[in-house]
Amino acid sequence: MFEEGEDLDVEDDLVLEVKSGDGCWTQVEESPVRRGKDKQMWRVKVVPCQEHSVRLGLKKDGCVEYLQYPESVGPATAEEIANSHFRPSTPEDITIAPLTSDSVVLSWSPSPCAESYELWYESHDGDDSGN
Image 1 (tube, rainbow, N blue to C red):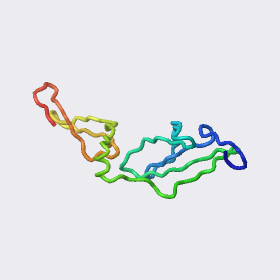
Image 2 (image 1 turned 30 degrees about the horizontal axis):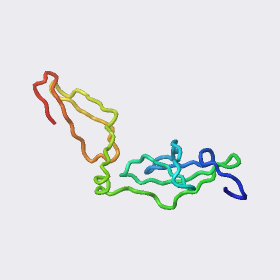
Image 3 (image 1 turned 180 degrees about the vertical axis):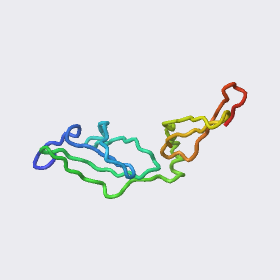
Image 4 (image 1 turned 90 degrees about the vertical axis):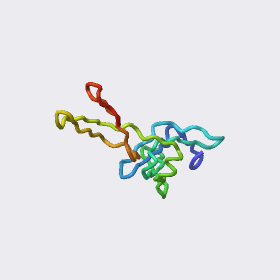
């Protein structure tokens, strides 16, 4: 029940949106799961090293009214991230450009929360490899 005896359909009338850092608000596409008799819960995938804002939207009469949580969530401390066993995603947009006859320049788009990268290589003829 909602106002004046109106029913609230969590699946159709309620949306959850998250904003990470200075990014845009994005709607959580997954449906909430039931927790107990009268509770719903969303599981949201976020990166722990960023600050997140959360808001609920109520769809009613062709409009969406928002209720934003007053405080941001995160970022987690380095110790909390380490204790959670979080693993950053693989870097993207990996580019290899020749520099000289025996060297290259390697670049990539960084992964959120990665503090360092391990690079393993092998020469074309297999004579040299390492990290």
